Image (cartoon, rainbow, N blue to C red; front, side):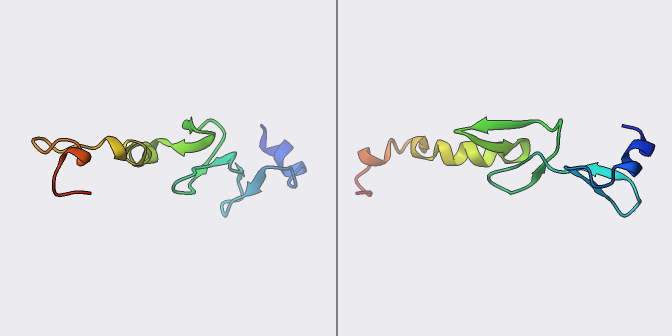
Amino acid sequence: MSTAFLKKNEKMRGWKKTAGQTFQAAPAERCHLCQGELYPGDPYFELEGRAVCEHCLGRYARGYFAAQLRWAGRGAPEERPDTL
């Protein structure tokens, strides 16, 4: 969009003026985990109906697969005598 158009329409929905007198799009989504802003064109993953940014994907996966975590030589939790 041209600067002249934006100046004439400063109250456009979804746009805000920054300190340098330029316009910036408002966030289109927020990451469900970190609450970071996702702007139009930013990549993200839609997982179980929630937006997850690329940075938080590892954190999401670790929580999602936590029940399948095993330690070499120790077996599954239910197979170990030291756990209930």
